[in-house]
Length: 149
Image (cartoon, rainbow, N blue to C red; front, side, top):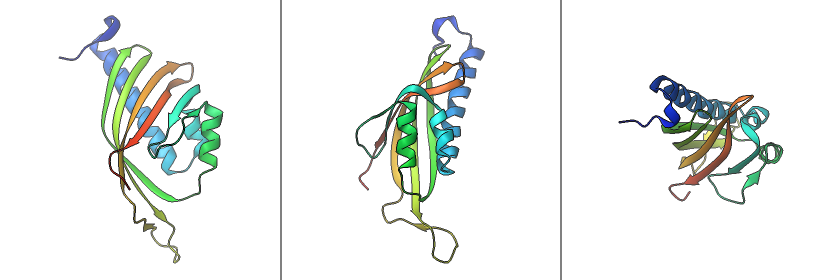
């Protein structure tokens, strides 16, 4: 049986689940398009982001954008699976998902990219999502790898 928090009806809970799942997918498409402005807009102003590959947390939307802009361009495609959203209330939800990241370098002949030797990477994201004036956003996004590259 699924828990409906704060007296939410099942339809409202399912709507939050759908909206948060869409947020995760929007982020994935923007990330693969390397549309860093769009990615950063999906975070709250004071969000915390931890890359799956590790490192220090990046705090704040502006710093998150800066960290994306500093990345070397690469060919990449993320596959997101097993998205599970736990609704905590009408404006708060936690989500977890599995990520598979394929990456590589542009081909010299202009054809399909050449897959990197350390690709794919497999890991997870744990998210805290909140509803604000601009819709659902990541307040916290913590990634981790399941296998060493």
